[in-house]
Length: 210
Image 1: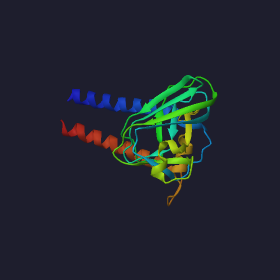
Image 2: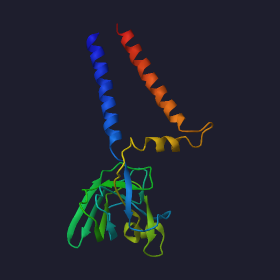
Image 3: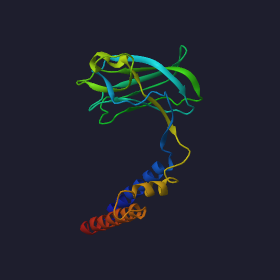
Image 4: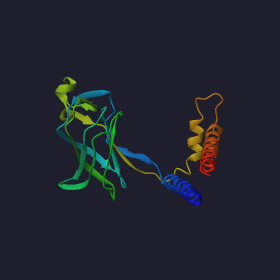
């Protein structure tokens, strides 16, 4: 019985530590874009393509690049950001992403702001046609354009300056919208109920194991 108690306490402690560490980090925020509008889908492809275009300014500390590709089950996506002939940063997203209007690709953190970049996007083979959002390079049907026929919308993301802890009141305030009754207290009530459920479930588990 004592070993079960120790295991339960250790497990709950690890969960609390993991939540604390996660909330102490800052969320990603958009630090810049390549100024291409995020139009509805204008192209389609089944992958196995590469396209290069002007990437504009890549802000300092960029660690994720978001590209306007949309798929149910997305293929592998690789990115390279070039400054002249030098690879400024690069990264890839494994196949399996989807159900979104963009794909976020983690890249090696950029140490300083760089202007006039070139970004090359490579997508692997796909079992289905998936959509490309951005601005067409020429007038044609979506499948005729493919990846090379569209200027992709690109967003550069980096960690913000505020942690999730410091944003808690703002998040609670926004989550309180659209309810009747509304207010930030709803989130705090839900958290209290969740803690109560965890406490009751832990108590019942220990009692049943006696």
